[in-house]
Length: 116
Length: 114
Image 1 (cartoon, chains in turn blue, orange):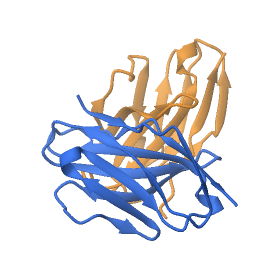
Image 2: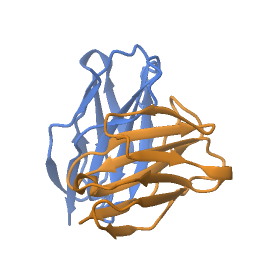
Image 3: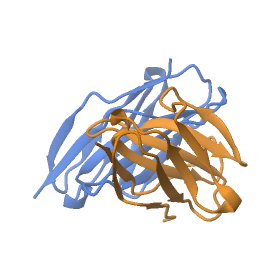
């Protein structure tokens, strides 16, 4: 079965610090894509960053980066220099490439609160 | 970034009525999706649509659900008849391609079935 698990329900940090959010996944696919999205308080869902399973280099976009550990089926999101406006719910998601499935499978989300 | 629009933002209807949720995807995108999110939970895939056809649907996509995109206009999700358990936020998404292509989400339609 394909599954995405985020065990951290909520995290609080002080602004300008670095935070890491965990995500592990299960898949039968030999090739797959991993995504992180955030959902703001207004409900808006924003795409942040993607990791392709065949790439060894960790993806980086702005102050978001990934810690991809393929043997552990783990894709952590790292946010450096956090800002108040980073407060949101962060969802990890996966999509298979070889199974022919089109759907994104989401984790349950991690609520990040950035405090002044 | 690219914007997906959804109309209406909130819909309240009585159980058993029909409802149509509308989505205006990113203009050059070819793949369209609907997801359902019950309050406080993760989003769950309902269906995806490409080239006028349903390509994949989940167990949540009941027989009462249907999707279409007539003449390249709104991509719609119709529920007929609605049930209490259909109350949720429905998100539309679109992507340029499949596989690696990220899906861009609309702001959601909150459906309340009384």
